[in-house]
Length: 546
Picture 1 (cartoon, rainbow, N blue to C red):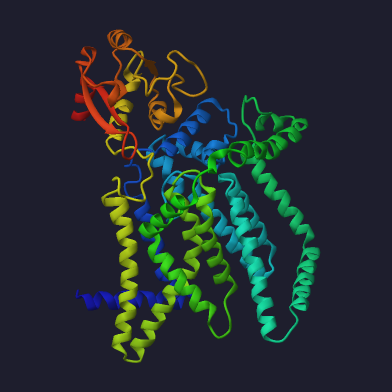
Picture 2: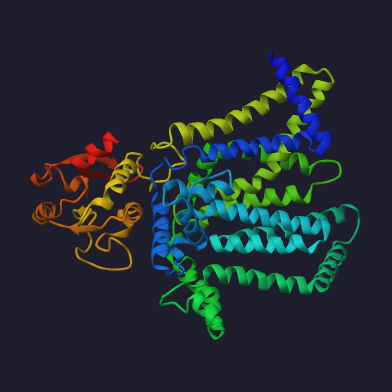
């Protein structure tokens, strides 16, 4: 079969789909992109070592699954991932693949276990449903939009910033109408009053829907944020369902209590006290590396739409304003230089970017129909360059060279790839070992030897040891801390642990007690924190043989 025959068969199949199901070429192209993106997201999904934040969230999922106790911790943002991944882990097991599966299913732009991609997906879906409500007047779209908005708030509190962007965009759209009214010679005040009265009429006509929407929003938020089990912050959900008298206190804790905890941790704290320009520069550099095509096409689409004969589209305008404000605003809102924060600009900018891409496609199609090969070639070149940039950003920065210091998509707290095989060795052998499985050694990884607490190992400084506790916990490994060479020697002689972990600077020469261990050195952060992992030789040999 020749290439021509293959092309003819594909075109015939597409024609049959259009005739039978009413599926047009654009829909087929979108479906093809979605399928390809879905496959790409799941390719080697579990291959990367867990990031600091991924390990922190996943650890608390395991803690919740084991204890049945849950309370809202603002430092790890909303509870959505904890509740959903508790179910996923029960089905797939606690692995790096399973940890990332929910995010990989939901949104193309990331498969990293942060709330940001989920917030973006839920809130953009809510925006689309609200736009559909405005077009059709059907309440089911409104209720669905409220549901997705509530889900956004269960993931991360910056969902509120989306709502503010929508309100700001609506104000700018009103300004569009007032400006055009002045061009027509109408009084802008009269136009403003007309729109105000129309909004009031809609509100009065649908006041019951608004009330049900508020109640539904609160119900979803309360269900996710409500404590579970034996916690010190209020009655658990199961207890309140058994005794309705506890429900008011439960709802208050899930809503007002969570809001107060959020304020104390993020809003009323110095987390955002940093210089603006360096964070803006980092944000723009990340956009250049991962979203250049979208940003350029968004500008083209916005300009083309704004100056079209029948005036700008509300959807394109509000999406561009939303994305542009996010570019300028998130360097203020974020507490660290986080590449994932750019998703909040890229997703809304994809709407005007689609208009820009469509402009070049139509230009090329029309030029080809007119026999203008030069213009058709230029349009094809633009589309090719856009496709190449997207492919290069994905392949070059994610799949081929996914961990290097000059990769702007890698955040500082990402461990090197070599850490994960060490943790895999631990997981393969911990169940059959009696006694202490892991020993943390030295000033860097040891905070309070012998300490107990809700986080395991309690003897280690949490901010420095992550993401290792996630791997310890999922392996069922017991971990302890020692802060002297003498105690290390006694522990090794007595317990024969499977793994000893120490900062490279704390073990400049191999202690005699570790003569039966294989040393592996890896970075626990993107560009520093050289860490030595001493794997017991029989463990290293056994796993290597397997």
